[in-house]
Length: 265
Image (cartoon, rainbow, N blue to C red; front, side, top):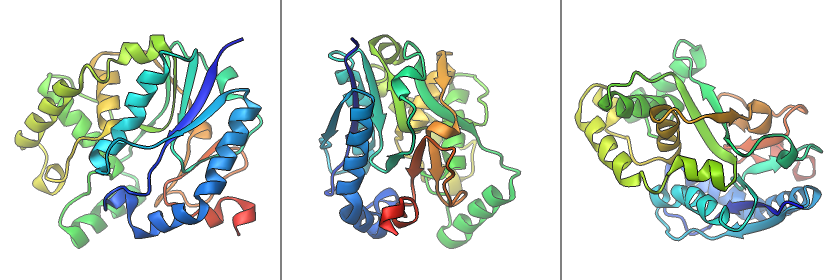
């Protein structure tokens, strides 16, 4: 029988960041135990272990890489490993371990349509209110990734991955060589920022980001992966507000947990 695990990484000590503002921190404080309980229940249903790990740093830029490093570590001891952000809420009777071939890394990749009115309005609002487009903006991540690829004379696509749900095993995770390539990616991001290809309103906010780096690796090295689709990482943010019963995993990026789970209402 395969030895499987689902894990998450979380700490309430993370320093102030747009991804961990006061509202989101408070929501986690209120609903953290319930979120852990729901993830544990799903792991039990899948006959898998469950672990919640504390990050090694309080700085968000470093914390958001811990999931990848822990994924690499756990693949040494488990046959199959699944990572959930703590704001990912299981909403299914389907066993994720039976749904995909973990010999290829499994992650949700989606395209950013710059012609979409909501996307354009979101970008415009950021520029008017802040003077720049924050690094955590989806479109900004795509541009950062593509700027890095252009340093290698590669024209990137309009896709980006979301690492709120990541599945793999030793074969597929080793194939990424994520930790091994960190220094390379840090250097290339620095070059991309200095290249001035993109306007300063965008590039000045770019920072090291696990999703930008993950997407860069997949495209740069043409790594085969399984796109798990929106149903396995149904993201609720400033573009999509309400969940659907068809979603297997609800990813509550906005942390509006009271709107997501019936008993919270």
